Length: 359
Image (cartoon, rainbow, N blue to C red; front, side):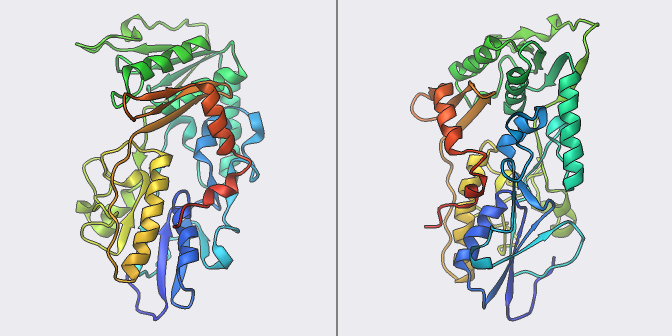
């Protein structure tokens, strides 16, 4: 993208998931006589990532509709103060400010494509795959595998589900041992198994891989679920390789600006920042980026982002799961609290997720 010269300046947001939060906030803040606000996204709607694990496993709650798991952008902008562009045509758009929020690239059953018809075929295919498999092996001990295991067991309690991972416990040591053991017990209570490797000096909470034997007469579906990678490959060629850290994430200042391009902001999963990549974090990023874009245009000082305590909410189907809040000694909440949270953050009220704190 190149910088523009017209009197009316373009403010461009790329990435329609949490970038949509920024676009909505800016549509209320920016003067339409001075700025063109443009949101670009590969899909014509926003995909509810929190609903994705259930969506790809079965038709429970019918989450693959615009009333539940998808949200179109036709009601996104306040007073229609903005333009939505769908696709990746390669068209050049000049900008005064650019916000990058292109998120992560997922693998396995969560690698949902962009085209609406492709999305429908993909979801139908993953649902049939889970339905046909007698035994499912999820490779990787992170949140995605844990939630997929819970969704599978919710629909098919008798289906074999095994999580294979390389650690001595599930998740990472950012979370307390008590929480990680609690997640293991929650999985085992619903019939899922875990297989991990030994880690010297630490207790082995799961059965070692050396004892992992699959019965050959079962239908095994092995799925890679060992994490995501940042969707940033397009940046090295346009902004230079030094824009990205070794992990592929975008190097930023505490104000979310790129070091060598102060008119460009980056947020969400793509930034090189010492915190766990999560939707809750991206929502906080969006609030600060929205304010900083306005302040940048007005020549005012920008707010710096500071890490907050870690929060992790892991559902196990509709009735299981645990939540972790990293304050004090680490607060753990049970399934009934999660059900209450998810009710407030309901799929039916998905459009309301576009409303963020602009104050």
